[in-house]
Image (cartoon, rainbow, N blue to C red):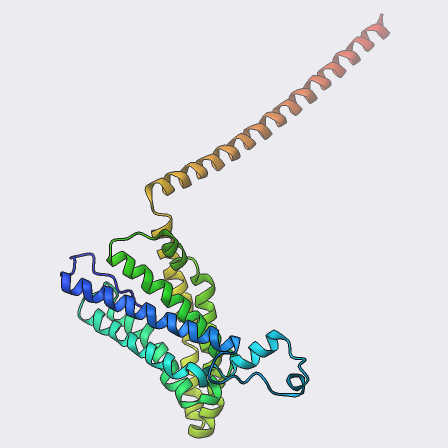
Length: 293
């Protein structure tokens, strides 16, 4: 998702900075609410339980994980409407980029926001039977955790506060959360291909497949971008660079010592062999002289 930090070229006015802080805190709170609703639902506190059915449930033989898995199929019915509007709130980020309030490019912001709006308004809202899946809950989990951390990190930055734990989480958890979120989205899009073909024929089916084909390269692009950001924010401090260079130099020194040591051993072996051959030659020469004498 697009950042909501001020541009580097100029600092925002106090009014704009106050607005961006309020926006980030509001967005963080909304996604924290979505995460809370998800956890409550999986625990059985939601409006739609959906876990207590079947013979095993009737006899009290369902395991905890079986109940969680069945509840995850009814997550959309419980909190899907809230997630839809929370994600729609992120459309403001497109306006932020268009007005130059943040340093994100407009095209990148539109692409990132529109992909999620596509998920909540088209895939899940149009085909609720598709969203009745554990992958909807895994998608919301990845989104909400990512966004709570991201918005908290940006709000802290706007306030001039350096929270190292937030920075580490922001630039480390994406290794797990991005594939989880994008993978869940892709599976839901794939599941929607059947209903789409039934209603719109093969044109709709192939359109859905074409849209799905964008997900893997987009994920790869985002992962590469976040890896660069991780290095920039977590490993670009001068002391870290000095430590890395020292470590690299130490490894090079160790490798050099190893090569030199191996060379010395080979020289000693050659010298020893030559010494033995010389001794044998002298011994043979003396033996011949004794025979002649």
